[in-house]
Image 1: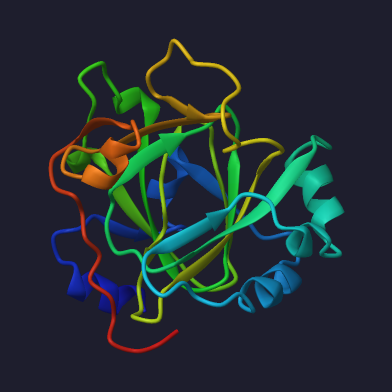
Image 2: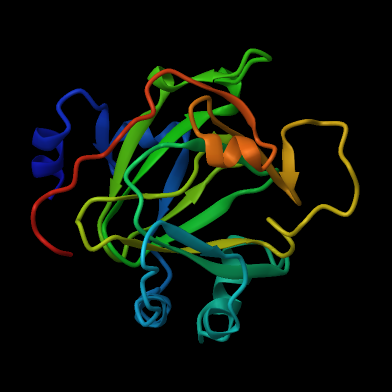
Length: 221
């Protein structure tokens, strides 16, 4: 599928997560069985349009390997297991956390990634981003220094990603922050300067350049 994606997106710097280019953004996790997480995640009905995110879902947090993930990936720090799924083919924004995020690809998908070291007071230019393909069943850790956002679909039937983060991440803030980029608990966010829906929600439009679009392959997942 990756070779076809490259043909469909010839101007995109598109790699596998197993390529050395991914090392600056995260690492591949291969020692944990994620089959149950995927089986549960793919039972959720797709939204009629757009994407959805639920930061904490009991049905995922009750999976047998959730304790193993908490101990091995989060050093016994309490975690939440949620889901991001639906339809998305554009960059739209970038976020980061003061912690790693783990993604389990319940379907094939693409992540658009940068680093906070490229983020200045003037914002971030999308030409710095690189794209990485995950096959269904692959799991990655994204470092705290990695800029990321909603996964992009690679097939017309959409995408589905299990998202693991420290408990409380993405919950509403309890105070008005001095940092204009702090949007939710443990979530710093900027949006593309043409993304009116996020701008209306108070997100700073500091992501400049092309709002990168992923062209899907023609077959279903």
